[in-house]
Image (cartoon, rainbow, N blue to C red; front, top):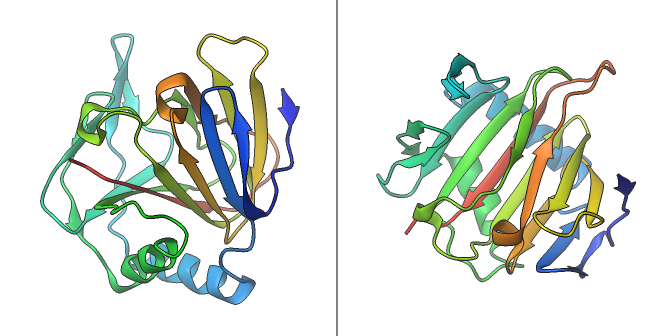
Length: 201
């Protein structure tokens, strides 16, 4: 899988059936450390059981859902009910609005505690998100590789190193035509918090 260095200034990277925009320094070092610390301490993290191919086990990460409404969000047989948006989450969202016109309503948070925590191949294409949803992904903490692969074009595969304080916008038909994952790694690695803002309709 090819490691692609995206333009760090938000310039669009056009892929087959996808559009990515990456802002490597969307939050500066001090801001990233501040948000990582506050989210670590104040978010009500949970670990839900997930069933895959008839086998149930604990998700290999901690999660939380926050929203400015009461609409639940379901994926992989899990239904989450939102907590209220916090001051920090609202601040992050207001920053994202500077570069995206999407009125995001909810944010799914993932805490990857170490390299053993992961998120398998999937797309954020649940029916609650509508057709061709835009996703705003913010990272704080340790760097992790983010893998993408096209559903039908075998050679269309890439991996991106997501930095602390970065924003990755996945727009266009990305969720319809591509899959993505955060793979496990055997390397010693510190925790990472990822926020994926989305619009639940």
